[in-house]
Image 1 (cartoon, rainbow, N blue to C red):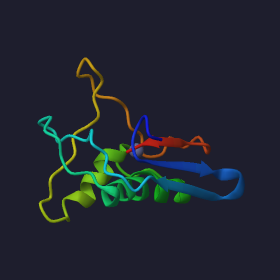
Image 2 (cartoon, protein in one colour):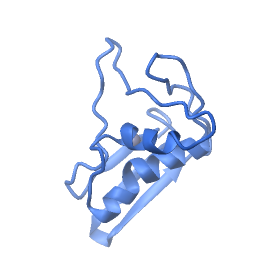
Image 3 (spheres, rainbow, N blue to C red):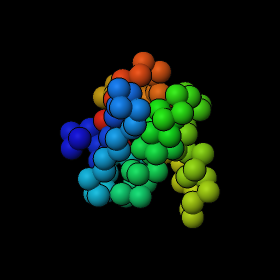
Image 4 (cartoon, rainbow, N blue to C red):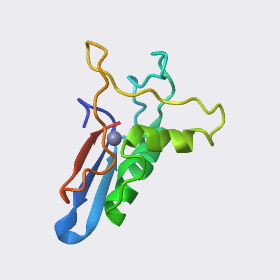
Length: 111
Ligand SMILES: [Zn+2]
């Protein structure tokens, strides 16, 4: 969890539940669409895991198809309303971040 972010969601479909973990630490690597670092404290991490992944895993649904876009729907409602940009690789290419890949054993291990 520490390598990729400060939260994780695991679809434990065999037991019909989703396990969500957060470290309680701020994630220091989250940026807005312009590439500027933005606040992503433990509350944002939990928001991402729940709205971005876990609730959809439980309901076996997708929302936008992208967990960061799902997160941004909630971020718009928060004070400041600063939106998160998509994660990029070292070459600037957008990395996929599915909200629920629907395989039943989805593992999210990120921010
Ligand atoms: Zn995620």
